[in-house]
Length: 636
Image (cartoon, rainbow, N blue to C red; front, side):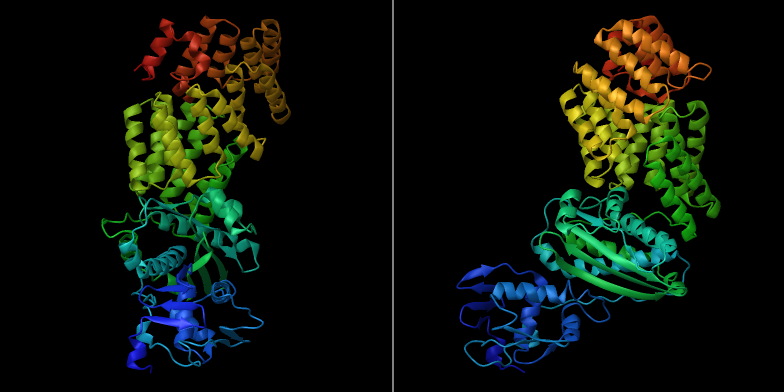
């Protein structure tokens, strides 16, 4: 034990130039405070406390992180030692402060207060280091992934709770954003990818419900890009706009699973928290949801001491992992925004329902698929939208707190019923339930744009982008909002940024309309020709009609229209609004209005844009057009 005089000492001199201030928790050189994160600082305090003696890696782990934990030693202990040596200007080959004992640990060898190595400070002088443990409660049947996710969140909550005192002294300002990177599958078996993918999704969902007002969690569609990626953490964080990253791995066999995870602060790549969990698969079913609720509450306190409230429970997970896997595959295909993608999404969501008829998210996914099949003119709305409504209502019947289902119902109210108050009510309810659900902000932004509320729309679009920064559909629809707001230069810039990532992304073809409104007809025709090479349907020809007509080259527009009619002979026109736009470009307002009447009878979702779409500006003073606007609730 150290002497009383040593234990009450506040400042310790290390070597000739450095001072360790115990009260201020600072390392200084010649009076200047050196930047040193918590883990390297705690390691320095431990080494100085045990100066002259070997400090093993096991002792370091137990003292700083607690017992029964996993650490990536290369990134944690070794990293902390590297940072210490950098701060102390120490050479590992000719050390003056920290000596490495290969395979065992480290020893502090510098003089302390001008004396030879020896004990300097008793353990009670050192800042307390929290440890976390998770007790397994009495058995209750739960999904494996839910259990693992709760364990990991409990560990994360423990770290945040440890730092709570500091957070309460200096509460973080603004919203903190975190990315859960795809958990790495270490089984060596590609067929087990669904397990690691499912765990990633569950963690995103659970963490997103901790404190949505203060903690933003990046959507799965953006983080999926980094699966098996070796990109530097700094670049990844810059692209996603996050301050923290949670990464991990999964290894499982027939009866056991090992989950490793670590939380990293990306500004300096400090490893703030790390855990490993070895469990029997059956024992994970015993973890109770109350643990997550308790940890979530403590996490709120650690973020700021003046916040309180009830954390909304995450939606119930499916009864089988296979149902979850099918749901995730459905969302993958749904995000492609192609006819084949939507049809495969429907198939996977239906199979997910078959595996678990009580899984609400599968029904919400099915509702979204049918709704967008209709929205993309890939089927008659009068057939597809009732199916979408049935699936959305079933999802809400199973779980009325599911934000995805409220968002699905909002889209149906907007696109098919043209019931704008009900749609807004459902969008707001979805965002209230899950402020981190990017699709709710995305579609609500479109809703606002259709009513001419462009400032609100762009704000919602930005919230969606922050939550899902790599989503092409969110980026494209932001361009559409700018187009409707007559900000054509910004719209074109936005569309081009999407095309630079994926030249084949279908909805980015809206750039043709922005080119036309800017009078950039040659660029518009070039894009039409490029689309013709990608799309073997007659629809690019109809776009050609629109461009030539607006350019005033009516003879070429009429020839293109005849080619379209010949190519489309015998098939049922599914895009009445597109036909209306073509006739309007040809100068035939009456036929343009006839086709809008047809679109109204078909309940086409394209009617939602009539109030703001510049293509229909020539019709705005027509009584028939005003009557159509009234019937779809857009006359105000």
